[in-house]
Length: 280
Ligand code: ADP
Image 1 (cartoon, helix red, strand yellow):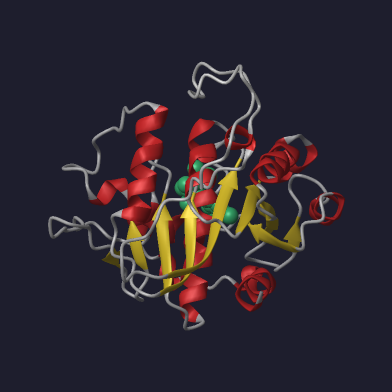
Image 2: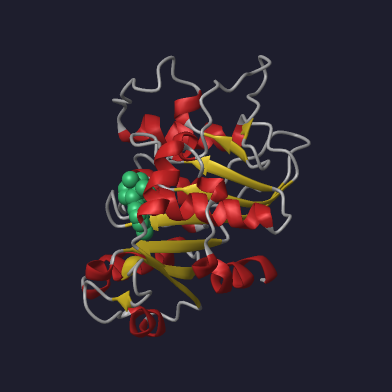
């Protein structure tokens, strides 16, 4: 729709013009489109303040447990420089295309996935791209992949709050954000940064996961809060985050991730959070 511009200072080119006319100030919809015939229901982005806190593990567990509940589930691995989703599910075959699009790989239990590691010639090839190229690749994982009737998609986001996550939030129709933290990060500003980024993007933070929250002694069964009492509920209340989960440090989870068997994991700690996500 064309807008009439009355300001005589308007140069009719937003690059050179300083006038705040309607066409400049109207919010632009930058969302990219799925391929024709594809459907993705709800999209949840899993974020963390930095690498190594368990974001990919939580993404994998959320997807695996959602699939167990009978939903058509997908993972879009947006962690382009540190992709670990295919490894977690033991998927090593390349994704194939038909010249017009790419078919997602499907895990043993039926989760559709796309990751840069499914496209690289060698899984160990490093991705040394700059931000805009990485953002472009993630957009293509949305636009160029034949996502087949997906109820829930989990996006393993690039870590941090930089330009790449920003591009993803602007481009994909994300319904909610799930923040993964360690106990120490709950004391700092990580959650607030994520909440502020979400506010800017007008996307709600629906869940907060405290990973490595405690250790359950395999001998006596007692739970030890190694990093001190959990602040999860206080922090969730402070930022009005409705769903929470606490995950233990569990060597069997590390092993299942490493062996590509994360779909076998029993993860009752995520039940309440998943009830909220899948009923909402
Ligand atoms: P991120 O995606 O945040 O970089 P990952 O999910 O790849 O982090 O986790 C980093 C490492 O820590 C992986 O080897 C993973 O298996 C391990 N890990 C993460 N969370 C746990 C946990 N709760 N218990 C045991 N190992 C974990």
